[in-house]
Image 1 (cartoon, helix red, strand yellow):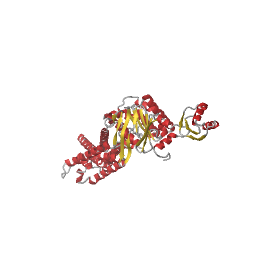
Image 2 (cartoon, rainbow over the protein chains, first blue to last red; image 1 turned 60 degrees about the vertical axis):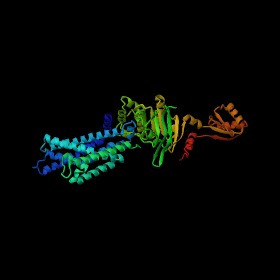
Image 3 (cartoon, rainbow over the protein chains, first blue to last red; image 1 turned 90 degrees about the vertical axis):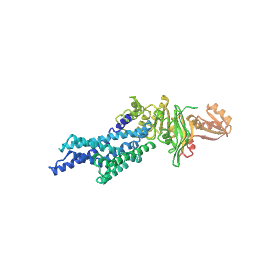
Image 4 (cartoon, rainbow over the protein chains, first blue to last red; image 1 turned 30 degrees about the vertical axis):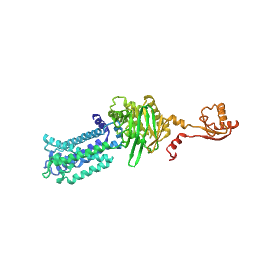
Length: 244
Length: 307
């Protein structure tokens, strides 16, 4: 498994997507920073607090940027073996399909967590540059925890995107799929159904923003059930699929 | 019982109503080059895909090194190298980096394995060049390097000369012959070009519409399709004695209706004809066989050369 994972890292050498994904992850902190600078110039007397900035940045990262960005990375990792015609080289070694699948999932988790921490770090740097207020170890730790929870839960929800990628063997349907998921996020982001829809429930859990009508278990269930169903369907399909 | 390196038993693959491979029985002896010959769409690639476990057979068995391949894949495949159709590589990496991935996955720890494989195919002079900048022929050679890097006992190559220039084809041919001779590697090579197979293979399996039409050694094939001059004469006995004595012709066959097939003296048919007539042996017909192997193949698959 270590060998498989190390080869997955080697495959990313000189890959432009890594840099592009960092730019994508930087979008949320950068846009929020510009917006808060605008607010500061309009209302210089109103302090801008670090915890607000962290929270807003995470909202954009989880609800808007994350689903599509991580979807693109997912599609790239799983689809390139088809587009570059390399899957047959690996499978005829032979390498277990399940182990190959799992090594890609682990790489994806590491990649998503790296981007999450990168966004968190960038938010902190922008906050220091903008001289926002209320920075403390507690604020940093709370924000870090929210970011990591958001990243891990979004990682769990990549399995349906993997399934779409394996079925279509093309980047476009996967990207369209994640854009559609994001659009639903935008539509129900302020409604009570946000606790039930897996991709918006991520932020609800990360922020502990539950509502009384639906107990927290509903949010957890919707995420884990979606993840598990996607994973099972994707692994079964990948294991049974013939390579042409 | 012969010691086959690879044997298929009634190997069949169906796609809905279409039968791509139909009860195929091929037998590959150890240390030989086996040419799987057939037109495009004959079922060659599907057969090789089934052997490599990329496609599941609808029926039948595959035995490699005397073991069922589905039950013993973990033991068998590390001893096999393959290129199935176009070889694929990570375009953002160099050739050594691509091979390093495969070496790590194969558990090859020999440091010189990658440089050895690249030098065998002549790709060792530009180690920094990205695969994205490779021509089709270079990718094909890199595919061969990937297939031989772990020193397999069985090498399966699906149309390996695709994209190669004439010199590249000749180099590939010599390389395969060397590999078979020096390392006793058994090689299965598929192609739709008879002349290409003929020059390397020891044994040929002709496949058409998924069925194996014939499995024949190259020696038997050449014997059956030797080039000859055929004279139809009035006095066969006298003609034979005359040709032996006057022209030292010993490689010939006598057939019915006064026909004599001579397997030498090509281009001298006029001289032979004149000499026979001057010795009162009447020649009623002279026939020259040309390109018989190609005709034989076309006849075997029941089509025309232009089909």
